[in-house]
Every structure is written in C-alpha cells, then in structure tokens.
Image (cartoon, rainbow, N blue to C red):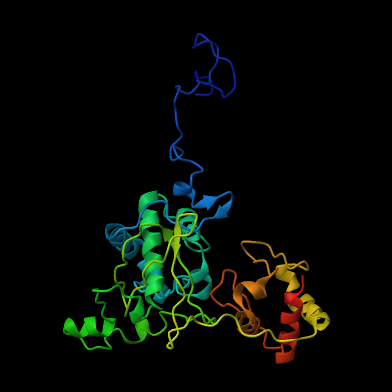
Length: 329
C-alpha cells in the first residue's frame, strides 16, 4: 500500500499530458453556496456592517412562511412567543435570549439573518436547514413578533380585527388564562418612552397576527433608501411620546473616575468599546437617552452575551456624574 500509484498535491505527474497532478477547475465553476457570495441577500451585511432592511418585498405569504420555519427551528429554545423559554431550555439547555429584550428590539434585521446563518454563542447555525430566502422570512416574522408586543389599537389597519390571546383561548374552549405564567415574561418593556423603530423594504404588506398579539404594528413611510420605518407609538393624549429625559447636570471629572473604575475594562478607556462584543459608548446618551443609560448602569443587561453586570455600588450621584462624563466629547 505504501508504494501504490497515487497523486501527491502540487507534484508533477506523467498521467496527464500537461504533467500536473492537480487538475484545473472546469471554466465557469462556482463554489457551492458562493454563487451570490458577498451580496446582502446571502450575508445580511453591507460594507462589513449589519444592514437594516429586507432584500425583497414583504407579503402575507412571506410572513406565514417565516412563522412556519420559526415554529419548526426556533421555538425549541425561544418559544412560540419569543420569550426565550422554549421547551429544551426548560429542560436544562443553555438559556435562550428573549427576542423582546431591549437590545434585540433595537438590532438591525441583518443581525438576525447573520445569527441564523452563522450561529451565536450556544446557538448553532441553521444555514444548512434554512435557505437564504427562508432565513429572511424568519427575520421578517421575528420583527412582526416583536412589534406585536407593544402595538396599540391605533396601529391596527382599518378593517382589521386582531384579538388578544386570551380571547383566542376562550374561543377554543380553554380558560382565558390558559397560557398563564408561560406568557408572563414574554415581553420586556424598554426603558425609553418612544417605541422602537423597524425597517422593512418599501411595499411591505399589512402584518399578520402573532401569538399573544393584542394588536400588530403596521409599517411606516419609506425613507430615501427605500426602507420603511414604524413611527413611534402615540401617547394617550395623541401626541408623540416624549424623547429622552431632561439632561441632568453632574461632575464630569468625577464621572471619568467612575468610568475608569467600572466601565473601561470592557468599553475601553477611550469609550470606543470592542464591537460587536462590547459596544461603543461614544455619544451613547444622545443615542439611547439618559434614562436608558441610568437603568443599564444600575441594573446591567443580564440577557446580553456576554451579560453586562449590575453596579449596585454606584450611588445616584455617581451615575449622574457618569452620565455627565459620557456626554463629553
């Protein structure tokens, strides 16, 4: 067996007329899964960053396909309502992140496509199980599922009727609290007043109802890039919800010391962070609002990967000074 005829990589061979053992590829050969390599449709990335939009028009059929694929591949961990309490998690598997967490409600659509394609943490990739078309359908359904948790009656299109899950349960002959505690923590209300925006390509159809949905958000007007965004939910008085709270004065110098002792090890002394693991804090107060910064500084983000710890050692004045420092350029 040691002396049997065989081809050695990169060595010459007398078997072929050109004397090479390695054969050239047939003209026009395309590597598997690389026909559209680098396109937004197959990566969810634009110039190295996660894009926020769908590469095709959203229809009811797309959302229904996304719901079907989601129920098959995602519910074992994330559950049908997306709260991260799927059946295998209840049986001891690594806890899944709630799709209704503040972080994921703000995540661009390309982030979900990338995670489905490449995996994330304990989550395996599903590139072999889901085609790019189906991955985008799941992404569209995830966004509809997220929007359904904070919608109001004003968001329901004229002529559409969407029932709360309790009414659906009663119509099915079950008690209205049939789902009980299983749905108790499905949503996590973000600590900012305005509802999170969502992007979908122009021409998207009216959304379909999702589990536990009392109402479903519709899509807003298209921007100059062709994406559409959901407007902020109106307040009970009919006016747009208020922006971030009024700026609170503080001692930026003391805040700098607080930052160095508690934040710089992850977010770097420059505040630039190490994306995507540790986000940049440059301009963070203007981006998310002072209320959000205060909440995160106090309670952390337990469902982030890696989780951000709480800082119970910080007093209110410490956080005020930290905010003042984060406002500096």
